[in-house]
Length: 211
Image 1 (cartoon, rainbow, N blue to C red):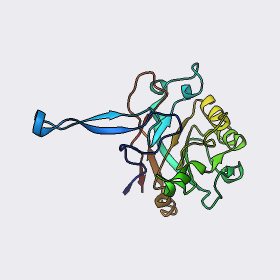
Image 2 (image 1 turned 180 degrees about the vertical axis):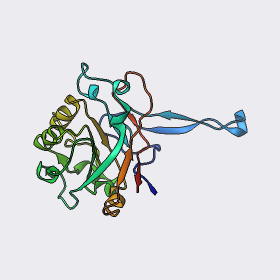
Image 3 (image 1 turned 90 degrees about the vertical axis):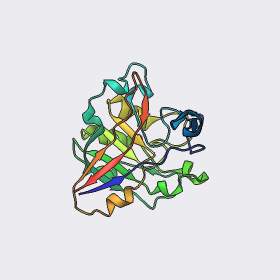
């Protein structure tokens, strides 16, 4: 068994979606002054590697704590769409073989651009692709990019299709190339969020278990 970290580090000045709260991590208490070390954190609910709850796009949809834990862990398949040009749309064709009950991870390769201006020019899912995933019974979709929709966006069709079906979306994943290198070995993924009451999303420590 091998554990693979699929998360980006939480640190001051890290990339955030345009308009989201900036991230700041700084000592609040120190051993020298207070006898203990405690960090003060300022961040948004969609900072770093995170999951979106359905209510992210509609107040009438479930919040994070209203979803079953099964949404956040389970067997996974990694769909390889690496090599696309910046800003490319990902259609339904790569997802034709996905099955219900699996977590679908979309490997664009864009995590290599984390921290650079190119990160916002990521590939994204089309509404058709999101619809196919929902139609196949997929309720958890992750991507190694800033969003499943373009950045920035006037509308969020992929979000609306997926979250409207009470799915969850994981964004800003990293390390999916390591999962692709696992070949035919089975993969389980864990995307367990902070337990925030009534939340629209939360950071996660995303981890894969390769068996």
